[in-house]
Image (cartoon, rainbow, N blue to C red; front, side):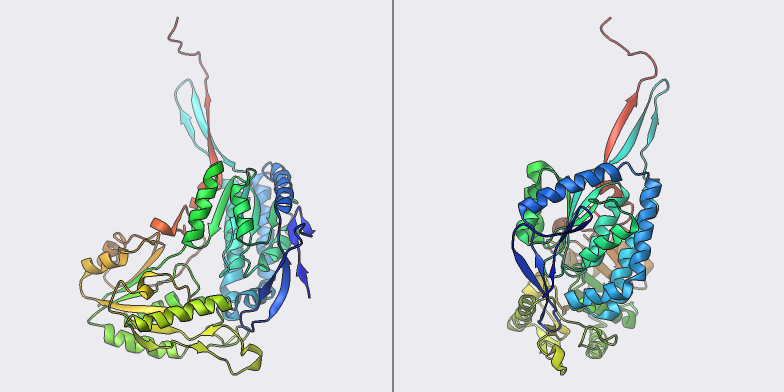
Length: 487
């Protein structure tokens, strides 16, 4: 069976730990391959390689940095189908999604920051006979810790701004989807990135802890759960690392009585069942005005039952497999919990067993809809990260805003209404880092992405990310004589 190695200093290298883990195809339950796990010795070697790469890359003219990154973006697009199929194999998501979103959105990020590289600049301050200026300088070696739901996209989202600013990157993919980051490393190498500038180390929580404590690493950027984010923040404090945390959510989607109901139904489905519900920003709390709830639910159930579940490699499949057996059991547990809490099961609610023998052991769950009357129900309060939607009703704008904000999370929110004044009025009061009006889960690289409250710190994407991958140096230039008060 094939065994993937670590990738650092521009080539594949054997891990010194002697440890390996298996990566599983969620659609079949079969082992894809084994992956070598990094030790502290490997990390130390990788950091030294990254430092050497940083010394070269940070002095590379920004226009040239952009040129290398543009080449990488082109290679990602050229290899879209191959990379998309690898993502499907590793994550269980539908090929129709991976081939139209995952790889291409990663390429968009690399291309966007390629264009930004030469435009990163400071400011000038004039004081008459003297002046000052600021410089935006790279941080050094930055570590990215990825999540398993969008492995290639997240690797691009973290590496692209870091590289544009002149940093070197050590990326740790999630153990459940470790393969595509290695292909990204190959692409960066082919595009002309110097050795040591983008590296991939594989491992679990132990490696994550080593990254956050390592004195040679200047920044940690994590996409993951809230509990993991708190550990990373605490550990990073020992060396006062820069941190970006993109964590979980339990986001609300508000559907007002004047909304286009068909569009709102589409938005709710996108906000819950895209990528089998394994999206951190998903709007899993749907608040529908009581006057339209009946017709909304009727259309929602009808459209949800039409979704095609099955082989993720089939272009017709719309709902794939959950990432692992453990996660499958977690989602099924929440469905049973919803029933026990008195929520009304309207649709789905069971494990799905495909007829095809090849995927009979896959981790599939039917898209599930609950009508809930209690905001304190656990399926309403806790992040499930699966295809489980809770629909609640409301009649008062002020009250529904209060209920929407009554959560420790604050990653995203959505509003469906045809009243422009209401749309602005409501989103201005929602405690969320990203708000969509009459759409959901649209994340072009040009706009910042990140959360309020326990959903994170800092922002990914957009120009905002440049601030998180640079440090500001102020330089004061005296052109006259010192104003000396002691003569």
